[in-house]
Image (cartoon, rainbow, N blue to C red):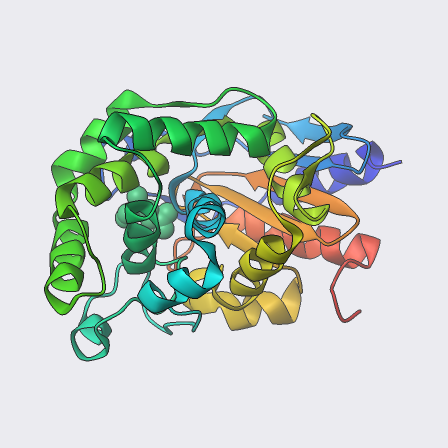
Length: 303
Ligand code: GLU
C-alpha cells in the first residue's frame, strides 16, 4: 500500500534542487547531492522503501537521539537532567555563547548536550565505551553498524568548535570526566554509517516503545522512550523545531549527513536521506518528504 505513494513523493522531491551539501569537513563535501531515499519500517519489521535506500551515509546529529537513549539507559533520567537540560536552545546546533551564562547544555540534541551524553556512556576505556555505543546503536538498527573512519578522522581534525564547547562545559562543571575522551566518542558517534533502511528500523524501535520490530527485542525502557521522544519533539530540528512541529507534526531528528528520522508513535518509523541541506542543517528534500508523508497519511500528531 505504501510503495506507490512513496514513489510519487520521491519523484516530486527529486525535482527540488535547493540547498547545499555540508562542507564544514572535507569528507562530507564529497556526498552525491542527487541521492534521495525514503524508508518506512512498520510494526511487523517490514521495510517499505524507495530511491537510494541502501546508500550509506553518516548519522551525524541523528546519533544524538540514540546517545541520549543510551545515556538514559546507563544513568537514568534524574542523573542525566543534572548534566543536560531539555529546553530548545533557539540557537545554532554548535552554539557556544549561551553556554557561557548557563553553565550546562540546553538539551541532548545540540552539540554541547550531545558531548555531555557521550561522556555518560559506560565503559572503563574509550574502546569499551565505543563498544557500548556501537552495540547499543546496532540494537536499535537490528543490524551491525560501524564507523566511517575517514569521516571520523576529518571531524576530529576539524573539530575546533566542538573542542571549545567541551572545554567550556568542563570548566563550568556541566561536563565532568575526561574531555578528550568525551569528544573522541562524540566524533565517533557522528561518523556511524547507516542506510536509510537501517535508520528506519532505528526510528521504528522508538515508535514501538523501545521494541525493535525487526529483532523482536526490547531495546529501551518505555519511560526512556518517552523522554527521548519529548526532546526530539521540541529540539530535534535545530533552531527550526517549531516550524517542523507545525508543518510535519512528528518527533524527529535531522543530521548534516542528510539523514532525518521521524517517529509516528505506535505506527511507523520513518527515515529519509538526501544530502543537500537548508541553512539550519536539515535535508531540504528530506524535510519536503516528511511533510508530504505526514499529510498523505494523516500522521501529524494533532491532525
Ligand atoms: N558532526 C557534526 C558536528 O558536530 C554534527 C552536526 C549535525 O549533524 O548537526 O558539527
